[in-house]
Length: 179
Picture (cartoon, rainbow, N blue to C red):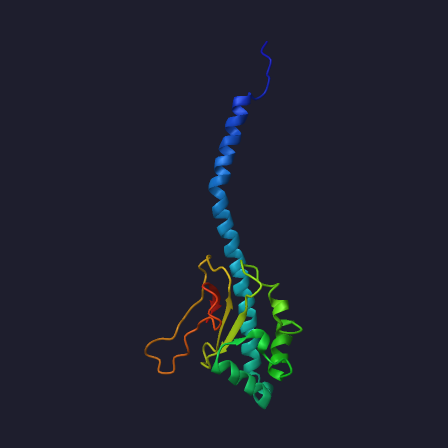
């Protein structure tokens, strides 16, 4: 009669070594997929802001107000930090109401950024004025290694091509953007 003793020490060490090799191979891939998911979350946040600002800028009640139109004109002149938008205008109130936010302060949206970023990350908005794609938005000082960018830059044949997007603070080498 043979007595079954279980696994030998050598067999257990081999199994543990195989598992360690699998973890070592899979960990970088898993980390990259997690960061891609975070970047997708940031793009979704930008898409939400994009939709709210676009909706507010095309609302007939908003465009009749001179203070709101001045705010939109400021965004057309140069990139504007999201937290610099005057929240007393009907334009900002409509956008905030659509987003469900109380204000555009950096302290609020910095907590919403999921990808690798730092405390100086900023959301910029620039009004381009075209009917099919009125806004450009981007987050500075983030990690875009997920390589998921929605980008359609100005074409050479377009005489009114919108300004090239840059980080106005010249600090970020990586940004997440939608244009």
